[in-house]
Image 1: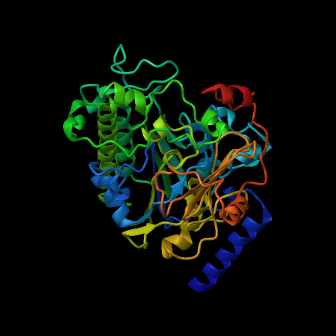
Image 2: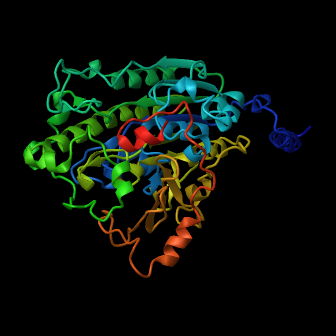
Image 3: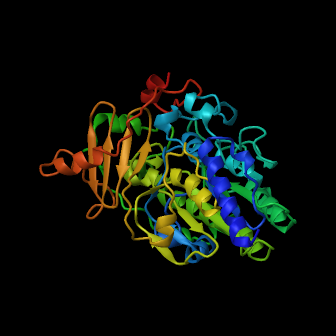
Length: 481
């Protein structure tokens, strides 16, 4: 049999297996298939150089990756908190499909609902298609469901070392705090995540691999060693744009959902002269994690796998740093839903920026596409490969973020439309209002815009899964039971 006939027969076999609905473990990966390096960063908003979210931030390594691949500047999470966001990304299913609207333990995801019992996690799908899977750090809410990786580096409990007493914030129900601590990088879990990942890149692998590195910073507490703070002189720090009374035109349910009583507010930070200190600490944490992302990227480029590895970097959601009078995630406004997404793949173009509305949910089908694996029919996202080829091409989809049952934000290139369970609405025009200061939902002339955006709202909104929980405020204490 000649090579062309062999390839044709192989392709037909793969198609038949995918169409039959059989487990994808019947497909054997070709050693020439691309590897996958996935880098997950916790609570990272657009304060990276390539996204221009803060004029002083220093992120040369993430910026370098963006120059080598495609940066999606309008990418959004499916839930504005860690647990449901990561469960959605790794399962390929929306929170409104699974009922995972709140936090959830990794080992309870599988049996959270009928939908999750049928799903195959992203890394499992690669594993079933002949890949070796390896991972360390925070990937799902904690690490990964038990036994689902071939090689696990685990994750240390918590978010790194903390002083015996809080430095600046003593709010109950949160580890939020800021200040230089500990003394050395070696004391930080992210340091060990990077070293473990680098060690795996130095090893000889006979099969293609999926390698996942989950970093904790800049998740609170905003603690890193002093040298990272020194890169941001306090007297030079710029704070974000802020409008007092920003929530005055927000529906009551919107304020209730976004309430985070255990966190600081912008008014508190201003009155106590702490706003610049918080921004300094956040930027220090971002530059710290950028450094260790850079060490992994350097190791990849110097390894045997540099030319045949897909790299995807993402964060699970954004973060308010004073905007709308809050320091938190936990909202379906732009600052909490928008997060970095960068994809670099063998043969792909570099230096591309895409403004189309995309979702972290799209990562799963995109990686299958780039790795030439059969599509998973359960995926609710869409492959981004058309945008990797033509970043400004047609894209008929919107990005949808969900926070609690029947509360959704729809993001297009121009608008953000929010629809709450009681029918209340918000509408923001990003062409003239990037800060989302002016709610247009009740203004005349926007009826057709809202009607068009409503079509993107999920049709399925299953009840809360008994496995998911969220007691962040009174609204969720009542609705998540």
